[in-house]
Image: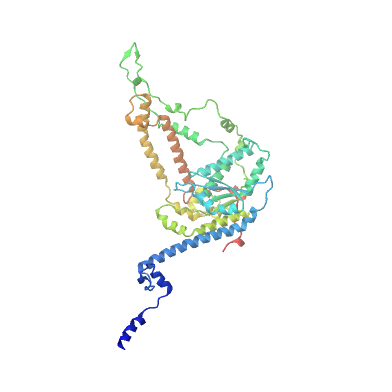
Length: 480
């Protein structure tokens, strides 16, 4: 009896195996794996899984919202792309301006923002665009001012309108081009672009119509500052043959004004056509107009570029909140496409820019000139004029030695060294060209910084009040 109880005990304790478990045991999986019971991970694993899951969830949610917002606005305007055009009609075209962000060597950041957040909605509505960027600070202001002056000369009859090299039968007239520009609009990406645009706009409609060559004017200014002049040396001639000094190289006087023989400063034998046309501009035509014709409507797109180690937290926040940029760009593009316009809000004051800067150091002017004003705080220390002054001082301290070497080798007063044979030093003409290029860049950076620096008010003219309009999104179409 006792033996039967002993034999039946192991049978009762045996666990009934399922067919799946028995099959997996025969595949080589250790039996201990089937006896494990689920339990919570350790503290470190819980921290790792929680942080990783949260980061991935934030990223996936943000990118999903970006696609949803972009698809929502694209569906609103895609019916415009299906409207047929006539054989002689052209699609609507806008001009996009993007200036260089102060302190950032990548000059294309503004237009890259446009291509990523605004362009998809314009493409969905079949709206054409032309992008214009400034490689250095102030380039955009100079370009806009020159274009306006050219238009004033054409309107005054002082210059023929530009024509294509191969005229086409359906070539639009000047009036048709202006009409298409007014129907299209202008896109300004960022506050720094708005400042450069307003500066160029005021200069173009206020300054003279003279076609000034900035590079030629700077070259003439640099030629008279004495940087390339040679010091006068007293030549002593103790040896005389037949009452005449020996014509040795050491007795030849150095050039007193080498700038006159530089290719950069060589005056032309006959005045150019532009010089003749400038001198013949009547005074009544060169006077700034009292009224400005209607200008294309402006689309103000907010843009902030975070650079530098101190702005890394802002970069991380922006990486997980792309949906806000997509929404802002989509709303701006939708306002442009639907042609919802309002008058440009003029500033609250009519004093000059210097008085505004003295009375309001923070740069507040009121109206649309305060557009995206907080963005100026992100490039407060991006650029300082002291950087240009330091680079200029370093260059001019090393210039005399380079100039002496170039003249010594050119006149043969000493033979070139082995290193100079392998790497020939720049000649005097090349040093003049290098100096002109550097001064153009330095002075352009200083002038551009004076336009966009924090606290500097945007340029304004009372004549702009009736000539400017702004695209504004309809309130009823805001997306929740």
